[in-house]
Every structure is written in structure tokens, then in C-alpha cells.
Image 1: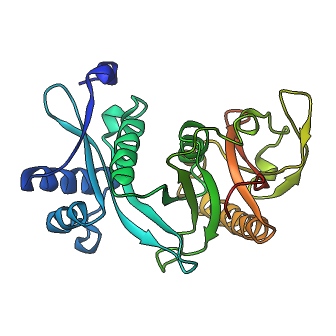
Image 2: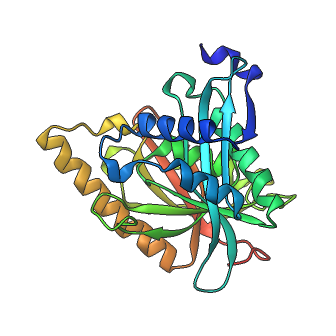
Length: 272
């Protein structure tokens, strides 16, 4: 069914073995995993959902599962507690239909029900579309950067933190700021430029350009080398910005080829 039926979609908490198996199957299909170590155990989903975690699905009017997210209770080395969202997946036929937003919002409800006030998850920093969703749609912030997050090359990740019960977004105006005119030559590099605020003020900011489309980096040898260079520069840039105490608050498309992260110092009153 086409995404035009999005208003008929509903989100719910998964509870049955059949639902957990369907979610595991969707997860494997969307990510294209064909190795058993990357599969998802339905029993694990059930245990997580019963013990501080989440397993939520998005269904069509015909009860077809087209979206899924799951997570668990987390705690960092500083003792901060949060709900950690391990994955959210959307059927390819429903990309752009609001399925991901619906899944995340229901996962938020589940997390609040467990007493969690923040949610965290990670994403690949070269994926501009994911970044825009995390920062501009959900109003989360990129609070950390971890090279080789999953212990293997090519798994650098930005850690997103989402304040689940925050009434006012302290970065709302900055998320709408226009980035400088950056292009392919700037991919992965830091550019310092002030951001104009709607009230006429300005904000010191750092911008990091990335490909606007993941497909901008193909798999042939020359393009793969370019891909690796961009990732290496991006790793260096994000590591430096986080070390300076900056957080990511926006990812805005500049043109068909380039998007840019905006990094700023954390607003006063926002917990580190």
C-alpha cells in the first residue's frame, strides 16, 4: 500500500510472540542482514519490553507491520539514566510517510511510563536525512561522537539525546538557521561562521558539511577512496567539536549535493 494512507497508521506496544517475530523479520529485511549474528531474537524483545525496555510497532489499517523500534534502560558512567533506543526501522515502501516519527513518539510514551526522562540512540554521521530527522523533527541533540561504536571499522556514530519532557526547545531558532554556502570540497571539514537568529542576534557556530544523499558516495574504487577520506575528516572534525564542549543541533540541506551540521555550545540550563 502506498504512503498516502499514512493517516490510517497506528502505533502500539508489541506484546505477542507473533508480533515479536514479525518485528524481527522486518528488522532483518530493512537492514538487509543475511548473517545470523545480526539477527534479532524475538525472545529478547519480549524480555526487554517487560523489564524497562520498549518494543513498538507501526501498523497499517490492514494490520501490516511497517515500522518498528526497540530499546532498553541505560545508564552511563556518570550515573545518568536514560532509555536507549537500539534501532528504528521503516518498510521501504513507507519511507517519508511519518512512520519513523510515529514509532519514536510511541517509544517516548513507553519510556516515560518507565520513568525515563531522556532517550538516547546513535546514527551514522554521513546520513544527512537521519540527522535532519533527529535534530529538526524530534528536537534532539548530538551530545557525543564515538569512533567504531560497534567495535569494527565503518561504525562511527553520533550519540543523540532527546529530552522527553522538555516543554521549550532552547535551540528552536538555531535549528532553522541558514548554513554558509558549502560544497563538496568542504565535506567533513569544520567551518566557523556565525548563525543569524530570527530576533536579529547572532550565535557563534561551527558547520560541518556532509553529502546530502548517501548515494553520493558510490562503491567503485575511486569513489570508495573519496568516501573513506570524507569519513576520516568527519571523524576528526566531530571528535574535536565534542572535545570543545559543542553539541550538534541541526543538519540542513544546502543544495542537492551538500548538507551541513550546525554545532554550538550547550545552552545555559541544559544538563551536560
